[in-house]
Length: 291
Image (tube, rainbow, N blue to C red; front, side, top):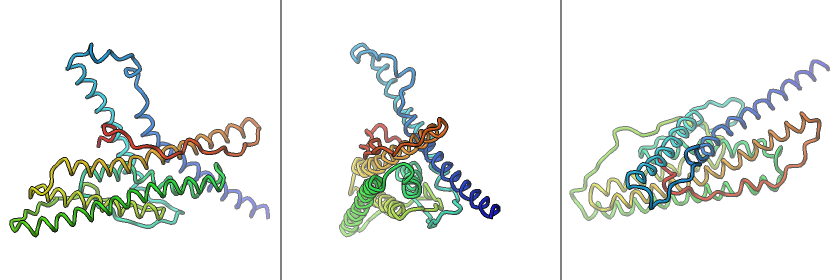
């Protein structure tokens, strides 16, 4: 009996250790967004009034901000790709091959899809340790609503682009057909939630919409600004979902640390309060969406 109990305890300990490790990994992914939004020491210095700045100084300041967002995006892509390529054991997954051709859509998928999938998975798996059932249901519903918006608008963008492409082809017998030489992103991803399956499919709808619009631009049926509007809309939707996931993961991480501190201090952990920090986030401003 002692040996059996010891084996059970070891299994439980290993499972708990894996859960905490996954939460810590998700927290690290989330920090890539939060850290980039923290002001640097230079940014804390009172800026000179715009009227006192030369054109060169204003241009330099703007370029500094652009470079900040570019570095943030690069870190997110690096961490996000590791998550997309990760092989999970002991977790039910669905293997999906994701192939995206447009670099902008590929950047969104690389930066945001892994954390979104991990957040949905962790809320369902360990959310009860930090929230009530009602709070979990509310969070899951808010995530699902944002996923649904991304999916629906992706399908609509692809349908509209297909219709315009068909019309353009019918009116132009000298139709030019440009093509990609290789995908911008090709990865096998172990999907852990049904919602993520829909997101991965939707990203390919957005990608198809951009492909058709770029083809139409070659044939003078659309403009580069119209293509940029679709890219920006996709990025805003996915970035907003990502920020929402960040608030959820950081909230769970804070509660995990607080519970550990209470145990170390010899106090019983108090019931989890309402998760106010996980309200849906608004989309980032355009300059924050740099690839």
